[in-house]
Length: 159
Image (cartoon, rainbow, N blue to C red; front, top):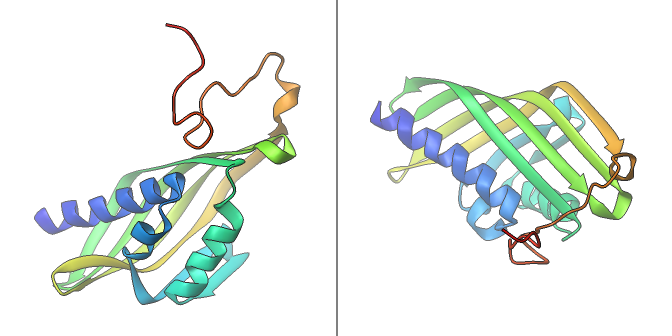
């Protein structure tokens, strides 16, 4: 169970670094030869540099706000230094410059390898169960009251 817990922490760190745009920390969670397949294969990349370039390019703008939550992990230790996992994903993305909100659910399928005593992501990717988008302006009164990047995470609402 200790190794499974360590693998869970790697995935949770991946999601946190993704949402906080902590690109260097996220890159440290990936093997050099990581394989990534997002959106059911619509976006596939080989190697840490290619994956990180894609993530920085598509998610790096301060107008791109995301919240990724993985849960219900099914992790199998297939060897002392290798694990396979399936995770349920729920995510919300705000594309402020496009006035859109994207929400969805998916399943991640990951491979982890243990190198020099650390678990790393060797392969990752998800396939959508569903995805929807809507203009944010279609929700009357909707306003962004806090942003990690523009307000330091502080809400403009008074307590």
